[in-house]
Image (cartoon, rainbow, N blue to C red; front, side):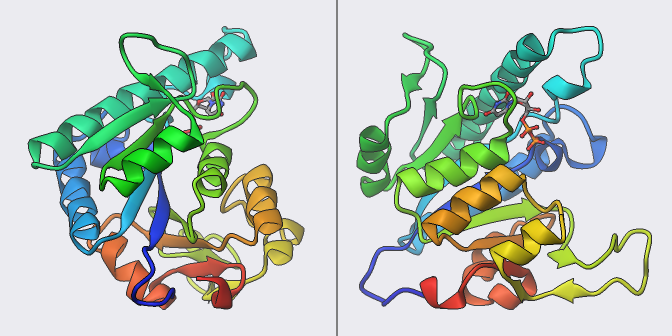
Length: 241
Ligand code: UDP
């Protein structure tokens, strides 16, 4: 952890699947409300919070068989905008300040992402939601999360999932599966552990930005993971966060 007088800035990746809750599709308002409560707790603790939302609860470009991949990916990126707007709405209803910065130009609708603008909002205590992925096809929001975390100088990239960390085999199918508490970027890439896109892992490795994978089904863990990293799995050096 950083020194107490240093501001902690984190980037949280929330997949579309998480936002969908039990339904598995669309946006579950109760799930979003519960996530928002924990996000507000982080802000109350003085933590600067950036968020990248996925879009898989609506569309993943690669899954659209009858649609050209580039077009499908554009549709997927727009799905992340829908999720980002839902999250912004929930935060504002909860009395918080949030802004959506988009990688896709949407004048009159959303502000276009730039690191300077993001830093400005983060320093003013806004939760900054990065929409539109990277703005480029053939990538995912994991890569967008890694990029935005590096671009805004975060000390940690948190990925909330439906599993409490990284296992040596699928815990849903293998009751003997063991959870790693810490492992290196190279191990994740070499073992092809699929916790995040390889591109995202490589970006974090090069920037020496640790990744924390944790169970976000209980949103309280969003706060807990910062003081108790062992409830999840950490990729990268412990010294750097
Ligand atoms: N996408 C893209 N470029 C990006 C980010 C996302 O083309 O930089 C598209 C891609 O089609 C992807 C979809 O948006 O499948 C939704 O993102 P993702 O699959 O990462 O969402 P998640 O699985 O996290 O909900």
